[in-house]
Amino acid sequence: MVFKVSQSGQETVLYGFTDGSEGVYPSGVTADAAGNLYGTTLEGGEYGTGAVFKLSRSGQVTVLHTFGQYGRPSGVILDAAGSLYGGAQDLIYKLDPAGNLTALAEFDGVPSELVRDTSGNLYFTSGAPGSVYKLETNGNLKSLYVSRGLL
Image 1 (cartoon, one colour):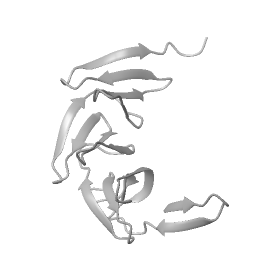
Image 2: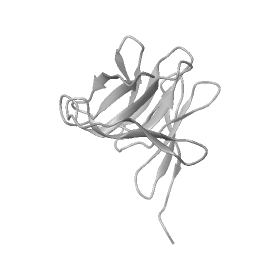
Image 3: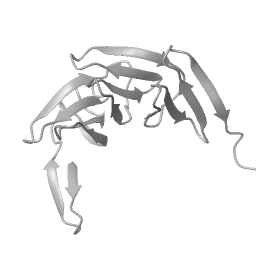
């Protein structure tokens, strides 16, 4: 379910995902200037491996993309042009406002939610205990740090 909590602590359910075709188990949402929410579901969708959705201010859910080969998407971030960026199993992607998905980088692992800097570079972690990556705007994927585990 997607919900909001007021400053006084009152919870309001905005949408309850109950149908596998639209996805289930929503994860991390982001809002646009109009108040629409965008997020992902960990399972469900057409292939059962997750989806990207839009939740309008009026409570209408639209599935923007369902994952097939790649699954278990992490949350999404939004740029000023209305494109969404996210990660899924072995993939960092861009989903433009027309619904076209572009693979930006493929790698082995499940990425965390992305962070974007002012230059447009994307950062994420993946693996256990974890590695840190940078995906540059030119498509170059760099490993910035590889954890050696606990001592």
